[in-house]
Length: 542
Image 1 (cartoon, rainbow, N blue to C red):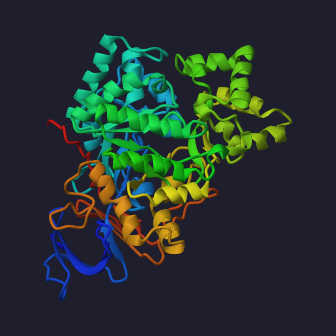
Image 2 (tube, rainbow, N blue to C red):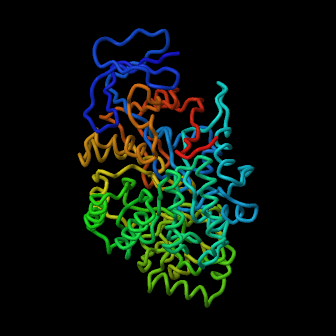
Image 3 (cartoon, helix red, strand yellow):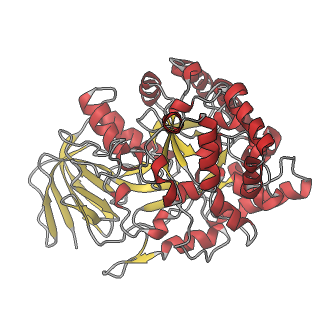
């Protein structure tokens, strides 16, 4: 039946100022936008949106919900923010394509991001099978099958490399490179939208530029983009950004920079240097976009900060090195005195490393404290504390890394190619508040309270710009004929409820969210509707 949304202030995602209108939704799409006169009559439902802003649903360009979408039919952490589409398969490691051999290792390697997966039936191996599994993950009381919010998938380059080479730090043979290219082609035909990398995570970081360039050529040939977590956000950040720009230009592949920021003390105040680099490339014809989250700390696993040589061979090899006193001392030396590649070339500052989650409940006392705080309380060195936790939690611990700079965050979010991405990890007792708060934080703090962005500009960053990067012809704008993925929020009250002390709190001021024209949030509460599906890329072949 028709839905008429009356008296809304429509901010349509184009960047234009808002305007009052009545919007009719029919069969999952925006049927009419009435800018003048009274609302149209309807035999269906009518919602009075007086005082609310109507915008396209928000697109999370960097999500870590690869298993959460299978595990949780409600997924309120994202739906309550107004997120109607997530891009998963991030940072070069995810669960497809895999083999019976690689899947168990991957599950262990990213248990800190997604949980162990013991509650999931891993009945897929290919990207097509994974996406098809998402589309039948849950069935609601109304007979709809799918997932809580829509999802697009990036081919994870580290997972590809593991499939072809294992966990070895070496160049691929010609046959191995051909295998990776063939897997990319198959995945793009299955509906992937591009490829991600985690170039500070093993085994993806072992790939040299020549290898990545060849993979990006294949991605580009099928209409996709490259989304790298590049080789450094610290001591070598600018060089790492420049490397990605040059590599993708050589490959002829669009570039989307993941959680693009400038962290650690060496980069304080250097966001303008990054933007100058990007502006030069854009002026020369490069196709570049980026995403950020509106917070200063990062979030990853504790094992990720180790030097790459310590992780060669996979999790079991890493644990063996940590158990050996002499090798553990070499790891400490790299971390604390040299600056490991896993920690972006910056010597470790243990006071910045807060434990946010553990996989073994016995390690809960670590959570919510920095490594330095726990070490001092125990009368031991920080490395002794960190090493014990890595071993006891079998590399599963997650961390908040307090190394960001507010002025960099603000400067980058103003850039015309910026989009929003939560980078939210839902696991752990005290996850980063961005998992529950990224989009209302933009609208509340950075638009209304501090005026860093105008409302119209911010909505464009969160809707039409990411839709354009994903090459979605019917999403990201409030336009007749577009899909009715919509959010209604109160611009005067919208705010993130999540905090560092209490991160699992839903936002306020977002009473309605629709996906495919159906309410998934109504009167501020999650409904029983399952309306999300996979969004397949340009090269999709049914």
